[in-house]
Length: 232
Length: 176
Image (tube, rainbow over the protein chains, first blue to last red):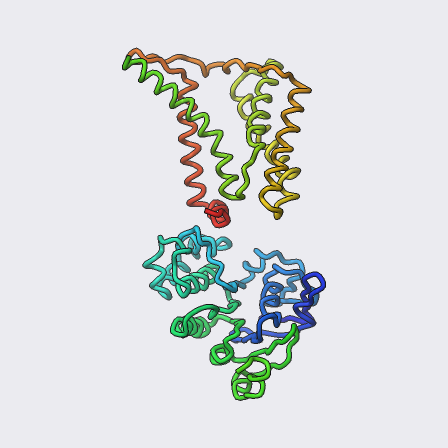
């Protein structure tokens, strides 16, 4: 579904991503793991069209070189950004409405109902300002908002960031639920064990390059890898 | 005495509505960009002088003058954005404050140079200056229109900001 070939992203003189190639097949959950500054989020930004990049990115057979951010969403991709980035001054409900900016009214109603079924907590707080939610609730809202665009392919950038272990478990249960629903996932995580427990395959990034890749089960067993690149 | 108070209250409501209407644009820009737009008054000035010019050229009908004044204000606002605000969009707020101030000075002096330093009066446009009398109080139709239009504009703005995707997007960016 997503094919990346020779992708590089640079911010001025700093090369954040160096000729990375990776693929995500339809229905697959792929994890992108690595320490801070490994280039994970830059890859997501390039796929979204938010960071200038060289190399080739294609999605569902379409070369994205000339595709605007909105059109990428219309093609069926969506993102739950790092740090949640909910609109703090808007209510839960209004956040979801903005997530649905590219869809029809009927799709909006359907997706909102399914988001509220998935996250009953959000339904209870639909008229509350997003900035007043707890971290876990904001993460749920960020995921729900990204699902409002009706994606086939969802990128989740550090969904466990800054959350308590118990809440991380809840969030990952929802991620498994999304996978079972047939959504194709690209999961960026520093929480290696969690990421490898839900992913089918994984790429290990360090200083902007792919150092290793393979089935998640193999990487999980590779203790040397985990201690070398990921510090335990 | 009571009559006088009521009459003045009516006048104040109409006059206040006019100011509220003028302030609406200032408030939107401030809440969204944290910028006090010193050139906001000049946008109104452009609209006012457009009305004046048209009346001087003997095009006095409200159905032409009002849309033209609005069009001039919109054109002025777009020009200000392009020239004074877009180039400094990511600069500190004080920079926008200064470019707005500069814009204001340029426009003020342009009008001083090319029109006049003296106030110019625009006659109340045909049909808008009827006096209504009820219970001994007098109101101009223009005053009623000011009040109604201010109410409608504020209501429409609230609906726009609460209901439309663009309105929500604007609020998502505002700082408070």
